[in-house]
Length: 364
Image 1 (tube, rainbow, N blue to C red):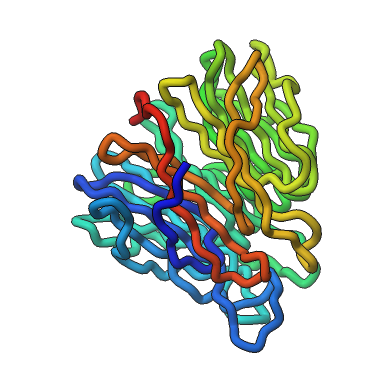
Image 2 (image 1 turned 90 degrees about the vertical axis):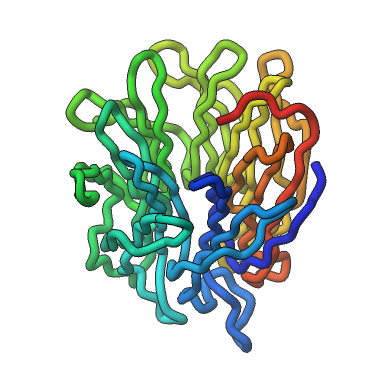
């Protein structure tokens, strides 16, 4: 892999790329910017910042727009009946003391311009995940925190919203405490929603035709993210935990069973991409240690299957790595990695665009 571009980001927390109207966009929400004179800490900074929107031009990304997304944690692009939306998640606002009861904004995209469509009252929001079951469209919201002194006034449980033709309305709450991530997938003719929580047990929910119900509780604390994929004749679910092992689970026909430990603590996010050689699972690592004394300069990994097990095939440096996405342009495949916290524990650290080697294979 070859680094081709540094993106000037501060506390980057997600990477979302998509094509609309013939243009490829990249959205990077930012958590905070450094405040002169403040100590280097992950819990400080000015969180009244914008999400950065880039567009692909020539051989790289150029600035396109900025969106008001304070304490930005996530961006999720999706389309419903020909309309294009971008759901953004805001963790907090302010410069300290911080307000965790903030609105997370859903934007609509028309002719390259993002306009506010709906503001959702959220509490320490981390992620939106869009999915559809038949003709029904849903948005799952991971949110919440259990830190002392944090008082929820907005709804604090992670929840699932449904599109009613005009807006998104709450459909179902999810048992939760400190939510981080949802992943929707189908296997064995059934629809599932995996949910990662930092404090409460992470779990897999199953659609029963009317709502989601608990299907399987997962081992491992401090859940961060999931990645479902199919390869080697099996269905897999990778599960990242920040302070516990990151693992690979295998569908055995009735439930997910432990298959392999991928790494120890530090796991944050995944990106899976298929190619002419099968496929690669990218694992982005965040930090080791505590919030008060974090080690952010870590090595993230790309795995491929060898003899039925995922084995590291590439490594690359990350600094408080939070997310990654893969895309194809002009017959080349690229990887974007969000870095949120430099080795000096400052928010301003570049996110990276890499060119990946080899044949791309089929990818939508």
